Length: 225
Ligand SMILES: CC(C)(COP(=O)(O)OP(=O)(O)OC[C@H]1O[C@@H](n2cnc3c(N)ncnc32)[C@H](O)[C@@H]1OP(=O)(O)O)[C@@H](O)C(=O)NCCC(=O)NCCS
Image (cartoon, rainbow, N blue to C red; front, side, top):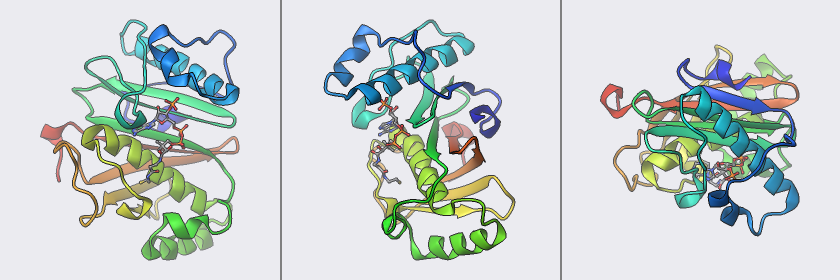
């Protein structure tokens, strides 16, 4: 499911539940000492998937501990992202010479809790969601917006090392289904590291009761600001 949303040279692995043979490596254990059992199982499975995706990229099994801000610490030369929610886990990796960063997110395909949309969206986004809802009322556009912002965050953070608020990111779902554009507001935080782009394109899909979103950033040399 996730691979259809990403460039072809991104290696992906996904599962619709936890995998009994999955284990954390020693270097990863310290990150989950205080995690509850459910959270620990999801993070264990997603790291097992990360090693499957790394193998597809030609890398030996490696630990993927949490780095700064919680972002996964990938082997040298690799970029990637992970997500886990009820009924889904996925990890994706790519050669850092082909992509600067990637971000993925999965959410249950269900409406956000009442009041949440107002806290995660800009007025312009709410107007667009109303239009898109008229076009296709079967989609939970509010949850899709949330997921798109989370995917952007996971792509932005490793490049910028700078936190974002939901109001810092402006997402536009294209009329053409399955695509979105996102920009980090010019008045928002300046990236702590200069490699971060401010505009992103992303893809989304709804299937199996899930919303999946994915964003990738091209390498600096090929990127337009
Ligand atoms: C980091 C965050 C985006 C994760 O999203 P989530 O829906 O809670 O959880 P997911 O299962 O989809 O993703 C969890 C994975 O994200 C990754 N992740 C965590 N922090 C990250 C960061 N700063 N940068 C990139 N990836 C990160 C990790 O791989 C994590 O897996 P792990 O817990 O097993 O290590 C979210 O928890 C968060 O901190 N949000 C605050 C920032 C934010 O949302 N800003 C507004 C959006 S613009």
